[in-house]
Length: 180
Image (cartoon, rainbow, N blue to C red; front, side, top):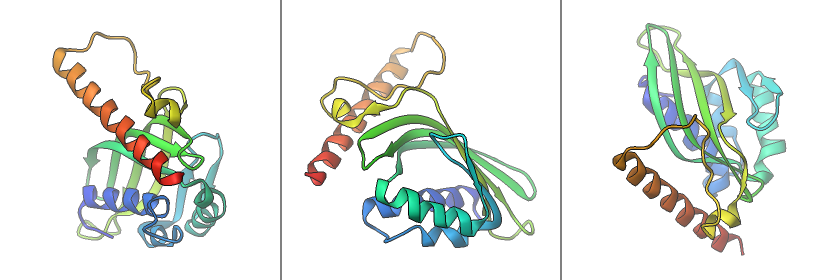
């Protein structure tokens, strides 16, 4: 655990990603980062799971074989005296990297006192666009595009978006090579 909110969020995301990356056998390293009554909202399903033991059991028994992970994520932070929120966007990979869903996520944290470690109290994510097939992304046929509303992108935003999707396409192509 960490007394720094941003590092606490990075630790949660990295430990969520670890099994899919081959850096951990299961989600056991997440449990010490959670409050005992943590609530996990499933990404592509309306259900929630409550309690650190049940969340860890669910991840190990339902998500481990699917190699779910979050890539290309960016965050914003909001903190007050003893609660913190880290929200952001990213691409949620599921079904052994077969599908990619752009998401908006929020990680809620609490501290027992103002100098203590942050621990995860709730996690939820909302799809912001359609789920796409990763092989189509690798071929450049489609992109996991968030649907935030229609507006004209500036030249800088267009350049950033092109770079982001190029990196996503390259990443997916590398993932597919390692699966074969």
